[in-house]
Image (cartoon, rainbow, N blue to C red; front, top):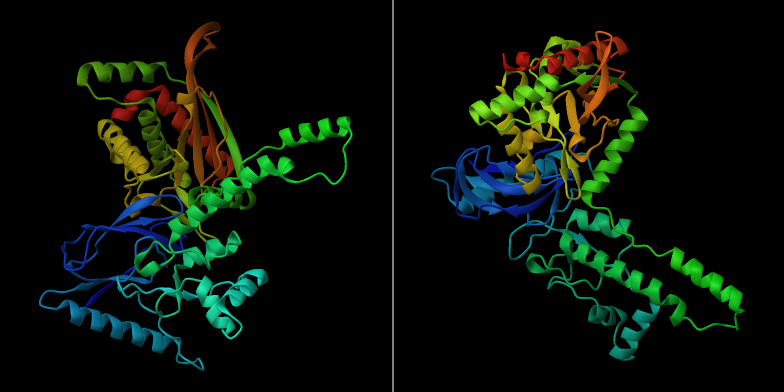
Length: 466
């Protein structure tokens, strides 16, 4: 029996994702858990591991295509089943599902056309009509006896079937940026227009717009002589408005959407504490000298966050709209800065993880986040996040909660500051932390209790080793 693999929901709330590249080819035997594709979401590229074993019978989606979550992307043949039989079985399943879902409609939907080279289903899109002068010019060139449709086909490249093939993501980007794709030659299989074609078109348009803005005042003839003073003012104004518009990347668009949603729909409150971390700094130095383990101050912080959640379990929860979900295990998301944004992959069961193992796991997670090799399970989960800007010299800041998590700890730099001890002024290494919490889940007293538990842990770091 053929196995139809569908596009997974690699991030919470995702409705579609782009298949960046295939790691297998038709005829390959794959094992359970083997990476089969790289899937691009709005915030990361992750490797998708096979949930079943079998032989690849067909790749239903081309590289670069955006696919709705739950749509078929791959067909696997089981042992003793031929690739042709698996494809036919998958086609039969698809037709049956389509017929079942459309039984109440007046007409059943027509299956999408198939790419002649890759066998991947593609969407048909009708080219936008060219400007009137283009159509007239094409008609004139074709001659008075040539039908208009023939003249249009002379200027608009099409596939042999007369269709324009493009992915849903390409269609959406074209609508958002008001692009006419009629004259675009697709670089995908079978001439299909894929996302990289749109990106190149947008980049070219940005360069053209910038050049036009620079050359505009010289290229347009003056209608009348301009007084010298007015010319000087116009030149100054032109010099002041120079700019470059960069199209939003999917990651930047996701950050803008999710954090705007957070500040407008999540009732934030903040609690702040100054933690003396001299003992933690000494313990880190001793561990490095005696064991050779490279444990960062942020590793101590993440461990303390997890143990504080275990001590105050009311904080280890998230808001679901009509319920509050309380977690049994303690997972913590760690913010990682990328070249074009940030991402917060999740470490599991941090409260039970030895500090040295936590340090190694954190380095591995950050490296794979920057190289685009996170696993889908690492992109969701956890009630709290940790964001540390101390390495940039930032002494304190307030972070925005990343829904659906209920809290985020903003960690500043550990710096020498004067403190009062037993009535005397002494120098100490102090780190300021700020907890932003979701008031729908945590009341102020719960947030304060959690922060007090965290502070006690980092000021008495031997407890982190138990």
